[in-house]
Amino acid sequence: MSTALGLTLVHSAARSQAGLLRCVIAGSTSAPVLRAALPRLSNIHTGTVNQNSLTKKLTNEEASTGTEGFHRASKQGLTVPDAVSTVAPVVRGDWVLFHPVYSQEELKSVEVLRRDAKTISDKVAFGLVKLMRWGFDFVSGYKHKDIPPDSKMTLDELKQGGFVLTEKAWLQRILFLETVAGVPGMVAAMLRHLSSLRLMRRDSGWIHTLLEEAENERMHLMTFMTLRQPSLFFRGLVLGAQGVFFNLFFLSYLISPRTCHRFVGHLEEEAVLTYTRCIQEIESGRLPEWTSMSAPEIAKDYWRLAPDAKLLDVIYAVRSDESTHRFVNHSLANLNQTTDVNPFALREPDMFVKGKQLGFERDEAEKYVQESHKMITRARGEDTA
Figure (cartoon, helix red, strand yellow):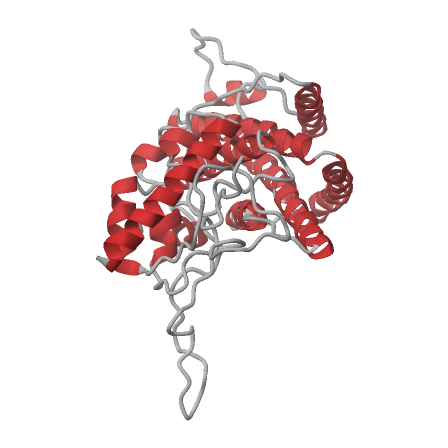
């Protein structure tokens, strides 16, 4: 295999303007829009690249522009210095890492999917997720029960029979889920960061995507925290669970990164299922307090929701995020963990792919990288024409 995967994938915007990152990377942006946006917004430098490989360069090979991460050299900082103060009265724009903003069609395109465990490591990952799910359900006293099709029970009777969770129970379940879900991305990014420093070699885009995942999960938690402040007992449970899970995942990632990414992929399958059930409960009127509740302001800002957005819109967006993590981690688990670059370092597929497909196989990831190179090269040619 040649050496090129993507050495333009991540570090390629030497003189991009403020809007480039969203135009290039947004999962919900179609290719034609991308091609139209690139010439206007940036001067892309790709260097000399072979576009036929998923394998990154060796440490002693010459690097080209676009090796490590997306870098944007802004011509204007956040603050404009003057004789009085260097603090701008208003700071506008994104204050978080990249995350997709979805159209209504994309939000509704997510499907509940299950990946069959094929290898021994896949079966280990799947079994651990099932064990974790069982333990969480046992501790929280939750047991999913389908409502009989011909049921005439009232909402109170459904709650008493254990068929429906209350808003408080749903929120407690979501909060605990999100405190744990933000751990894997940070642990994996930290270990890859340390490995890059220790071995003095390029990471080729993995770290940035993993950090995006960790922050995205944390923003889910921050959003739902606006609805309820957990008790000290709940916080104590989170502290214990996080400490145990962090260390177990840390050791596991040292042993088998592939198994860990597969584990997270299966974990996100459960998250998509959980939020899908929550959406169904709201839309069927079984969570009346949430039916007309306005979206928190932090959610409107983060996902670029409409001013009149409801909590239901937030949960649709969260489910789409979880579908993205499902897709990305299953895809990363299919790659060579030491030689392949991250195919999502510059852009991601839209939700019509991520919501309906579990992930890219290795050959699909390589093809996707080649398409990314062609788009950048074509955009650069149009920009210089």
